[in-house]
Image (tube, one colour):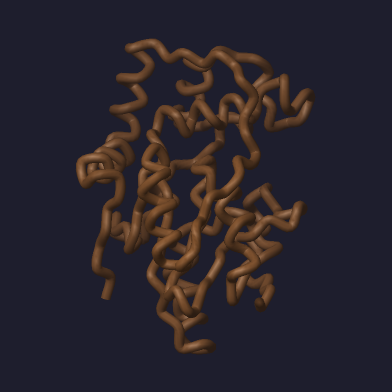
Length: 228
């Protein structure tokens, strides 16, 4: 397996200090797996890393689709003559923000500057969708992560996080072995209810993200696209 460390993102504030993988590339399986934050990909990376032909490390853990499409995809084609299919996972937009809320709670982070200090989940959500989110609420958008200019989502296999069985079956078939990852980076069990009013505001602010997620669910848990 080749371990590479190109494309370090100095502005992310999330440098990879724990050896986590950015992107896994599998030549035989003709597959690339990208890690959308808070979608359980760390467990799959841990399971699949020994099988990867290339593991991109030491940049940001979560390389966006935009960077992959414009920089890594051409590199793979030019260097290895590889144009693997792209796989990613997307989670219910409310639940992914809830996961960030739990992850950045005082119970887990203490006085870390990314800790939200114990605000309510409603307050956290409003901070996330504000014009100038605080550091703890700067969690990004799944739709933005998965898109390239023009709003295009160039992913061949986009799975819903909530349809784990479909994802495992796909990987098991592609790798010709059972793929059953063990949970990793599980967030603390903290109550995080959202009020109907705040959820309406979230759905309005992030309508394209909810629309994309709904398309995956309506497609049975995986949205497939041809990418030329």
